[in-house]
Image (cartoon, rainbow over all chains, first blue to last red; front, side):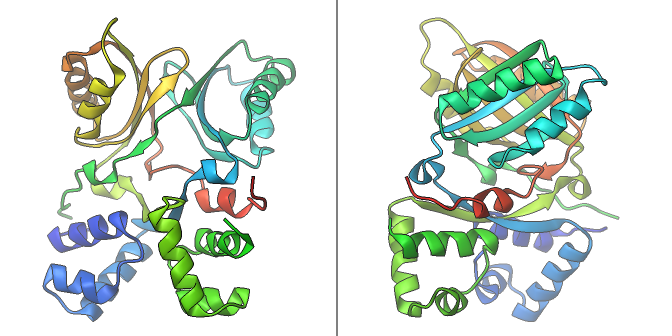
Length: 153
Length: 157
């Protein structure tokens, strides 16, 4: 799909603030609100825009420990591991990776015990040998650094 | 934070673009109350930004890099953080308590951009070592519906 400079500007505005009003975006882009609406619709249909998130300070809700977990595993272990981590309600994301670890999990825990319990569970039930848990002490979201560029078809 | 604040948070996390009017109707308070509480929670930084999620694959990106950074001895992590916060395509960074000192997450286009990125980070004077893990997942910023996580939260500390 072709994505031009105006599409990029719209994406940048919505990444900064998903609640920004259409008419304010329209003013910044120099086009009509209808045009902005249609472009957003097109970006959604094409699967470029996949949703929206309201970021919340998790600490205020008792989730004090954002963490990433790196797991080294073999293909036999993967289904077990996926099952164990999917059972968890406070999972943010997980993705297979190559390099330092084979599976990287992001979650936010209420307590250290919870993280420790997860680690023990993975070791005992899935036979994982190498798990590293790293606590995020100062998370910073810098979405504006994403250097989106127009794409010619 | 009271029960109404929590309800507002739940509605916003379920649908970040929902209008205050709709929230007010759903939870049975006036729109003015919703607006007031929303403003207060934003000022207090209980509510942070709201943001769209996108698939980067149509924007020329092919994955993400998780960059694990070890600082040089006697160097401040804040120095490295400052550099990371300004780095192109690095959209999350944090100091870490664990096996290394900082983590940066960046969107990457190809091998060249990965090498470029790692070299830029290595060039930061306070940085000693860099390790990476790469994923082909192009969901920005994360690969799972974060809203589901937040909607499941039903208690205050």
